[in-house]
Length: 105
Image (cartoon, rainbow, N blue to C red; front, side, top):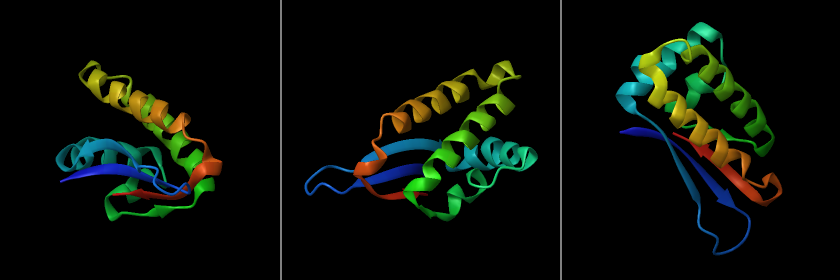
């Protein structure tokens, strides 16, 4: 299993945007402990499959930036930092006015 973000759009016929986040094992061994250590609210909920309000996406992006900063001190995490950069880039390109639903899980 894995954790991913799925964004549905208001426009009929527009494909959902799927953003892979992390494999389940990696989420449990790296993402979750780091998020809990940093006191993050949203990242620890990713596994439970929350549906986010569109206005919450900015808070999630802020937490991902904090998570990235928390992982940046270890050279073993270079590929994790690249993954988080990819997620942030994908999310930053989304026009929130076009989004109908955001699901993480």
